[in-house]
Length: 367
Image (tube, rainbow, N blue to C red; front, side):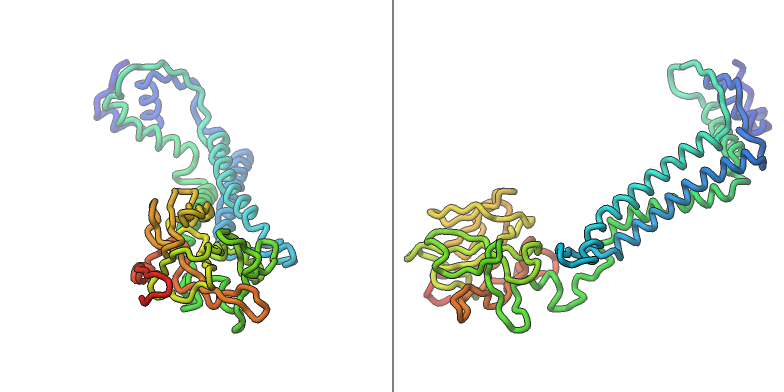
């Protein structure tokens, strides 16, 4: 096929460039043109069908952002009535709105290609090798001519506006989960902020009891020497609190124990209570070796020495498990004397865990 000189290509119309580009690419455009007469009822009907999908996508994207930020997502028990229903709907609402946004956007793009894009019947012969310079020059003509015949350059303002809304809604729906964590200030409550306080803090001045999973309070005689029991604070919904589980140990009599500096008296006799949340990435620490006094985190094999203030002795964890100060109430049940003195779980920038002493001393000796 003859390749016209650059001067001749420059004088060509968009459609002529498109046909030339197709021919140079081994494509014979048997049929090529707009699907409907511009402005005809069929043309407007096709446009409205595309617009509806893009509008729906944009609306669902915005609703996904609104639901992510403002829908009640705090855990509610089955006895909380309508609050529990709203909580239970949080994840389905996000799935429906975010998934519907993507689905509607995809259907809109398909509808745009099937109903608005130029009708084309082409026969192409494959070729080997890179495209020539003339092919690259004519590519712009093909693209702009397609846009012209679709009416997206000078017409179809509704489609362009709805497409922009759909793209914006989809972008918001994608960005909000990524940026949502920066919306809420975790330190708004000051010293009572969630990362500082756990359910073990006294309630209205009353110390919180240690209870088992079924709510049974714990006495010293309930635990055998050398045993471990997982306990929770006796407050509503404490089982669902990520920083609530505590390991209550009863060490064997006369076991040599070292106490972390600054934490004398946190134990009660041979009973010691440590957070069950690993200081590495927050997995539950639960595997206990009585003879060595070590507890193991099954996720990444961090080990903590209960005989030495729950100091990390193996694995990636770099900080001891926080110790809960415990005692007995007037009825002989275990209670938390006060909350942990350091944040529970993995470290974070604002915590003072790195500045607290990690040294230890034998129980009964001076710090």
